[in-house]
Image (tube, rainbow, N blue to C red; front, side, top):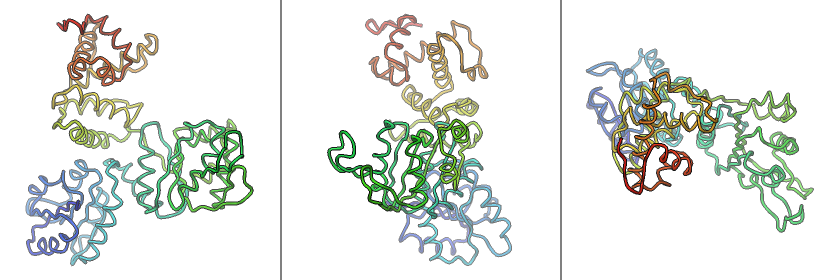
Length: 445
């Protein structure tokens, strides 16, 4: 399917010229004003934007376009003498600018390059994330290792995939260092020969060999066993390694991207991580800020997720502005994962419109689950920033959300428990306490 390009230009001759040049490679839409252009923003993957339009300054369209589709490629067309304005456009989030008269062949090449690098999973509406994407694009074309840090759920693997995509390397291989037994890590990374250890019944290629020519993403690098760390360091320094059980030196062209939510410097002090490996991995460090510190991304992520859920659930979903405001001000200890978790549950419980009450009830349910998990100790007080509740009001909200989940799941309690993200037995216990009887369908309030 061809990428959709929106041309916003009031000079009909120029607009026709751009369209004719681009439509052999792309699906082209044209608009002659800001008002007309706004109706096409949601479907446009790239925008060719003139700054002088009959109903306003083209600069005003950039933040709106990025809010609707954070990875939109935006090229500014500028006349001689308006370069400062073009620079301001780039600061606002435009991809690049081109001076008139435009080299159409160069425009096509630039569009192809930037559209091929565009990753639909990346949201970069905030200045901090836009800076991170620009840094990622710069380091992607180098062979240097990258260390991505940040809290759980901020999107470290997504950024790693973006860097890989921009690098034009292939393939992309991943390893979660925390998810495998420590004694198997070296073998999994570098491979082993038959008889190298008990159970090694055949030669086995490692992930480094499998990633030849591409990228190897080592997630949770802070969990890498201390005995394997010097071998990874050697590979980073020399691009050579030894298969377990072999004395032969192997070579591979692999780019290492690592990620961690740990404070590696503290791990070094504790003796759990080698300082020399840290400095080698951190040739190009990138720290992703927590979601609560980049609120522009929260709104963009909500809109992106609602669109995805509409497609997945085959229903047109919308979300109340007051619900967005509530979501905008949560603390998000779980970052993007937590936000998506709330929206997924809301999409199941809502008909087509996600209301403030649904979002409140879901957060309320999380509050109650936390209380159970902590033996009655309240650990998440974010909800109290928005409303206060008596015990009766709390139970009423809890009952409403459970009933809505049961109804949406066709009264299948196991499915309702999954939608609510609670244990099946916990659901049964709550139903009993709240007087919900699924056998008699006695659901009165």
